[in-house]
Length: 245
Image 1 (spheres, rainbow, N blue to C red):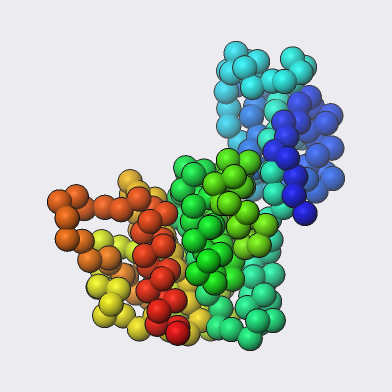
Image 2 (cartoon, one colour):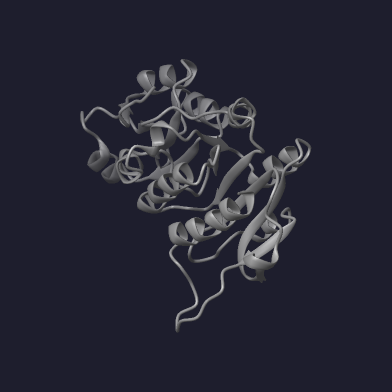
């Protein structure tokens, strides 16, 4: 089921949205507000691990569509997120070894949309993204995915490293893209697998990289040393597709 990304403004509407179970991508709070209702909203946001951004009143005025934000604006997700368990169940129902893609710090919605498109075409059973320091399922992501967002489930988790540890207990092993790793052509990428892709600037973070079993590099023959994150995800994903047969 899909939703339009929506601004929810005002203290009571925002609090009701959290308590009603709406998926909130991020919460904007006016700097310096510490009264009871705002503290209640922040408490609910922390329960859901929602990203909180503290901004000036002028910034809130710019974001506001009603002019009645009362110091808080919540941005509700455009699409419903799946659970990690849903993704594993999807693989089971298809009778296939799980093939997951985990994205570490992808902030550009066009990159995320393109990755979802590739993931769908490569037969990835689901994509996992972190709740913080990463883009969520926005309308721009939906448009760029060319419809893939409707078919490839996306789960959002608090801690990618912990999620990797939990998935290892389910029999998965993990390979991350790393320009200093072994050539992807030298690695055995068959079986239940999670492919971890980082952002263009920093790549996969150290803490997540250390949880991975292997590091795969893409052979580079040109004069520059990096690929767009969505392109790198596609190259690595299709080497996995080739080996899985």
